[in-house]
Length: 459
Image (tube, rainbow, N blue to C red; front, side, top):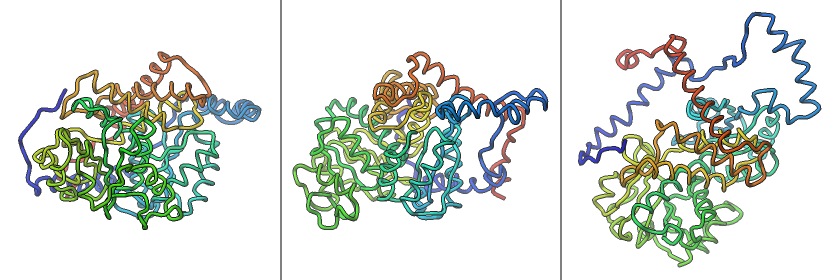
């Protein structure tokens, strides 16, 4: 169902109150459930005699098989569906460096999304080290137990180093959601936004406001997809990024420096306002607003402007202000506005796909395949200026995304197994529905308790 267009503009006070409500409820809810995830059996236990099969002495037989061929660990254990969510807690949401213990609720939340949306068994691994090479070593040491690694909430620029080195050294997929997940969903949104405004994205000028992990990777993915590198303009708090800017060095941040050398062919300079002049689309992943992006800057953009204001909890500009300034399509990171750009559309389905073919890596080409599938799903079921992306409750998009990534893994020669498209779709659908229905059944039978009322929680 396409969201209805409305002229209602809530006050800033109302929006702030709404934005604060989840935080007010979150600690009491976490305390009530004592966390969000648990481990439960998936095998039949008919009586205690079955333990002789699942444990000693019977378990020695699969152990010997795996000793002879380690890849059989993907067949004889749940390794094929295990993902480690690895963080050092140095850049957690908008909270910054809060440490590994304080990062645990976020990693558990990630595990919940992995399971409910993608049927993936994910485990929080919060590390008491900030050393990038040690984090790579830990990921490599964990490899025998996991089918994939999801890096999460690690500060820049070391997050680039960790991703690059871990991908080089490991034979299971390694992914950094703040980079690749964000880039995937942004690309999907841009594909459809440009279709609606009738422009060719690969020929258009795109500005990325903010030069953190998300937009640096978005720049790489856009270039990989076919956007002319010189047509991409990056900007940070100091203004437009251009070749020769003295504060951007290869030694301090080689990835930001590398992007600087490939983009902004016109050599544009100036403050942040200069990054908007005449461009077709602006993707912001920067400081929360609502005045980080100003209406007068949007007025200088090309006709049928596209604005993605992705900061949370408050976007860089309110959607109605962007529209009043001339933007035709506006997306944010919030679920209570149209066109939510949400990483949760990406990682559950992407990991479902690469796990189902026991892939050895996740490439940027797989991100692009996922983005194209997300965009295609929205286009097929009907899209509009206010509805350019699938939503999390459209569960059917996740197995489709899984298939797209699995097939790309096979095409690129990094899949250990090669099922057919139909087999992949049926498998992904069954695993995802099992996760959803298991949760519903546990709730129905009271094994997952219903939470207290909001009034009781807020006492």
